Image 1 (tube, rainbow, N blue to C red):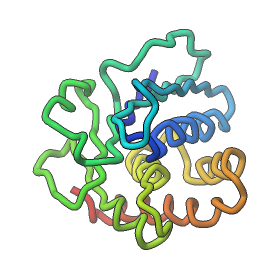
Image 2 (image 1 turned 135 degrees about the vertical axis):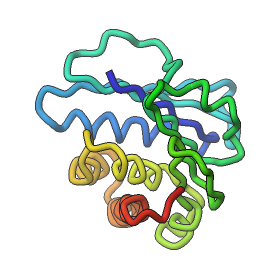
Image 3 (image 1 turned 45 degrees about the vertical axis):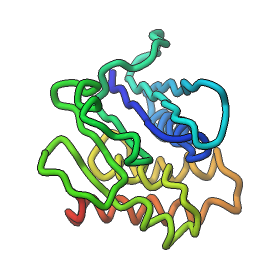
Image 4 (image 1 turned 135 degrees about the horizontal axis):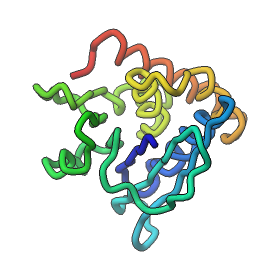
Length: 177
């Protein structure tokens, strides 16, 4: 099972990204996904976590992810050295930041910059989903596009798909840490 841990703040769309990833992964034949949030009092700006589990068999384990294949941070203020303890041995951290890290486990992307340019809003969920697609070959960009079309309102399709592509391109061109 592939396990992804999403870190964000209320209103940033971490749970939406978690669901979109699950929907995209499950579009392929014989693939299953489970996505769910974990948060305290619901309020904008409060730290939240969301989880996505991906497998080629039905998923019965509905517990929170303790050690992830990917730990994704929509907000770099939530990142700390404790994130490394959340990773499986070959896990990766995807971090929305302008900073660079000299650690092959950390992939950085300026999600805020891409969001400002394309979305005109400080929301990085689909951008970080695109960054994941750039480093994770088990989910295709085409399936992410379809998940966006199926799960977001039509007026959001174009900009969010463009944001996904910009993030994939940033990761693949090596403009990340």
